[in-house]
Length: 226
Image 1 (cartoon, rainbow, N blue to C red):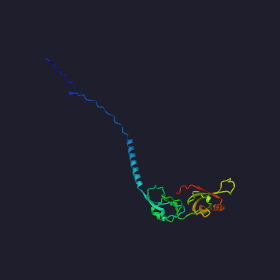
Image 2 (cartoon, rainbow, N blue to C red):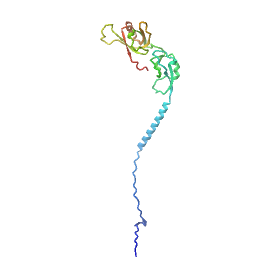
Image 3 (tube, rainbow, N blue to C red):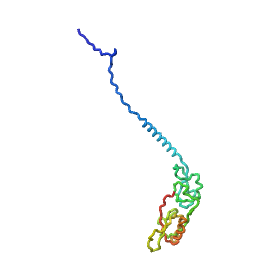
Image 4 (cartoon, rainbow, N blue to C red):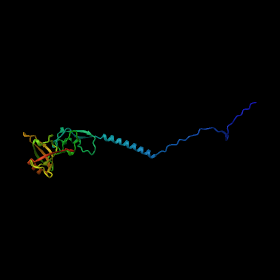
């Protein structure tokens, strides 16, 4: 007779205890509320900046610009002016397009360049000389005129020179700051008369020096004509 033995698992409280796989808990990262708030704030700032830039780019206004070059002291005509719609920084001085008609007949207070935005300070009601200024004519032989010529608006230093064959001065010579107002047509001998604008204080001394013919010209950079 064969005997079969059956093994019964041990029971706890009358129930069979089953085997379960161990549960592994994955640690969660710690949240940082400060970083989240900062990220949201940066996103909002970027969005607002983009909206502002788009709005600013769309704010265009009509202003007066130069259609062609105009010399210093010349009278403006309608053909000299044009109107364009541009977006300008508020700090840039400009003349509204609605005032373009009133500029005809005004005088260029500086040399005006084609394509530039016209500023109120660049035009005046009367030509040179203006308040506190005088015009002094200078008679120039052809060999005393710069090779590149002279144009209205050029800035000149009129420098006192010693007599012919004299030694150079031991002290600084008298110097007069002037602006070319008009350039005449050379005569048969090549002599040209150039009207220059000087201050009231320098006018008499410059005229006396011009009468002697003992002076030299130094052409200065045009600088900023604004």
